[in-house]
Image (tube, rainbow, N blue to C red):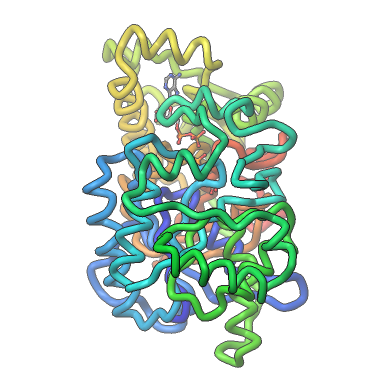
Length: 424
Ligand SMILES: Nc1ncnc2c1ncn2[C@@H]1O[C@H](COP(=O)(O)OP(=O)(O)O)[C@@H](O)[C@H]1O
Ligand SMILES: O=C(O)[C@@H](O)C(=O)COP(=O)(O)O
């Protein structure tokens, strides 16, 4: 394995796996697999990039650090020479962590400082300028992410936000320097390291800036950021003659399909509105779930029997409805109950013969995929930016699309189920 990624959630893992597997247009990418947690044994032969998906974004910082270091150890044992810590393009975290503590622990384990921290993903509108994170034309804190059910993002100043999480000083390379090219960026990162800055926010507003980061950091052991920082990494290995590169392919998976949505983001709610106009759907009554009146049996029975090729079950709600539910039942209790409901539902669906599953939401996907215990997933083609087809190993594979809450075009759900089947 050449490149190892430690991702702090499951949708984020498939997002960066997509970037690495597809590589640059006309050049191809690395043969990439996504592992669900730290594997117990060695990876199978032929994998050039391994993405270890953790569910560490919203757990206690100490536990996130321990899991991330275990992932690093495993990736090192697979021979990786470069490592990426992948977090959210909207920097999802709290003042306690987990981006700062994990990134600093990885840097310390690898003996490096002056490490890039850049969540930019311009294709989906995430840009960083003067250390401030924008989502399309809004600052992060006015983008809707300030209403996130688990980690409300209320500060767009990444240097200030990361400094609250980090033990060491946090640096900044402004766009005027990163835009000047790989040499200027390299010099700025080296200067930051000399000043004792372990993590350095690097501005990036378009893909050219991301390619500059890849070039400047070609020999860096550790890079941290959103999937954008991986944009040029596969090509770096190809240009050094370490692999020939290629297009990701997986076989289509026939069989019954369904969609589970636990994300409350604006994009997901828009996709739901569009989908339910033409497909069977079940709006999960969260109060009924909390009272034990709605169970996974109910949700699975609906999805397995309703006469529709793309049935949907969703708990997604408006920020106001989410707040009211959290006030009534407690934030963590609601999330835990819903994540558990979706996980149990997915197990029942697969036991009931379902073979294609689309999941919306990072935490939701993490809960679902952990419960399914599918082992390694091979990365196929891209459905929409940041969301690839994933297919489990074995003779009776399951095909998955794990959609980050804010990703995907309005027609994502129907399109994804077709793509999992090998149709376009
Ligand atoms: N109606 C609801 N009220 C409160 N919380 C909810 C509701 N529906 C889903 N959730 C919780 O909100 C969280 C959404 O997070 P996630 O799945 O990561 O989505 P995203 O990708 O948009 O961040 C999950 O933990 C989920 O259980
Ligand atoms: O970087 C991103 O935006 C995504 O890859 C991601 O991590 C999103 O997380 P969720 O919104 O929780 O799915």
